[in-house]
Image (cartoon, rainbow, N blue to C red):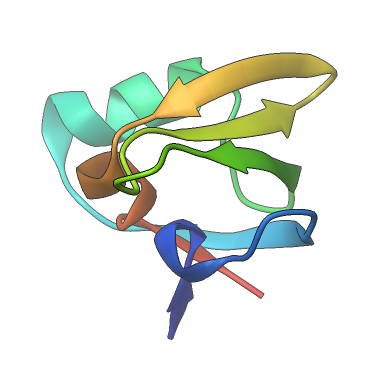
Length: 73
């Protein structure tokens, strides 16, 4: 299983599944990260947290813990 956390800078990946439950999963979905969505990895902070991505035409920063919940291909 590949996660958004493991994707490299410059990659464009497709969301396969969201892991997690309740409020965390709902927050990711509210940010536009849903099944089938294309996500482009823009930057990763020096210590790996946060990860900056482009989703649905806007830029978004995700914590490593949240990025780990997004399964991609």
